[in-house]
Image 1 (tube, one colour):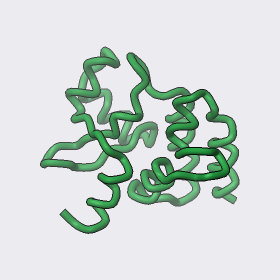
Image 2: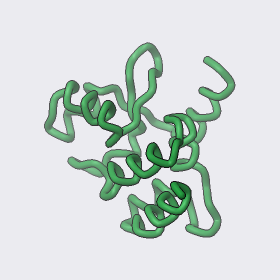
Image 3: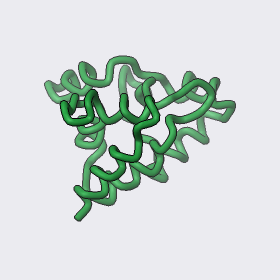
Image 4: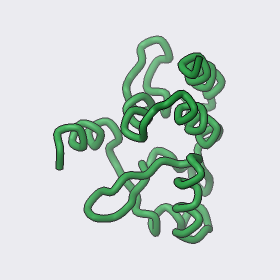
Length: 119
């Protein structure tokens, strides 16, 4: 595992395999893979399996606004690693991390910032 992988793991915390993520969402692991391919979710290989951050799930659904925010970040040229860093790095002006703000239904400001980085 590289230093960068360790840093991302520290920021993200818990990861879910595609199978683990699919259960609460009521979809197949292949559907999760499709969402990643469509840039509506982000996944990385952890422990030999493609996994997504557990914080991306809110009960039986994805965090509100997450797919659109990920599209904005990828359109802005962010790599998966850069987008994960941005989503999970504390920002005093929010306050908290962008993913925390989205989980607390404060996603409008997060998307505004993501849009601003695209231009």
